[in-house]
Length: 164
Image 1 (cartoon, rainbow, N blue to C red):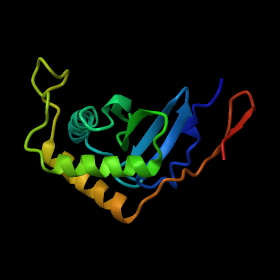
Image 2: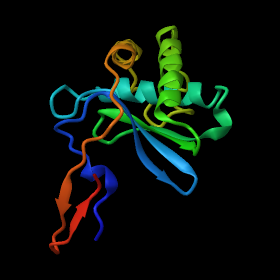
Image 3: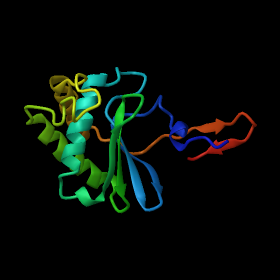
């Protein structure tokens, strides 16, 4: 069985930033890494849920809305994935993300947080979402990272998978 590409990233060296996770079938998957895995606390679930609603709303209403395929949180709660039609690089995604985060900081409410519009409408935290957004924005401005450190992974059957 093949190792999932994201499992080949050295999470002990991964810094907050924006990375190209995948390029395939005409799409680019961006890894928007908000916190430093296993060294900083993950984003709290309620803050991440609010961030998802706000980022999805912004991206799907922005000038690039026709190229947005997916906006959603990572299961580990250390970042977001954004899938775009191919053609966007990390610097473009950085600029878009910074514009989005600045917009989030001006919001007074999280969209779609009623029982009829959200599957877990009580799990939201706008103030903490804005705190995380402010911190991430500063990181994107002042300490930008965009190159993965890869691992060599040995599968159970002894085969090696390396993507350096």
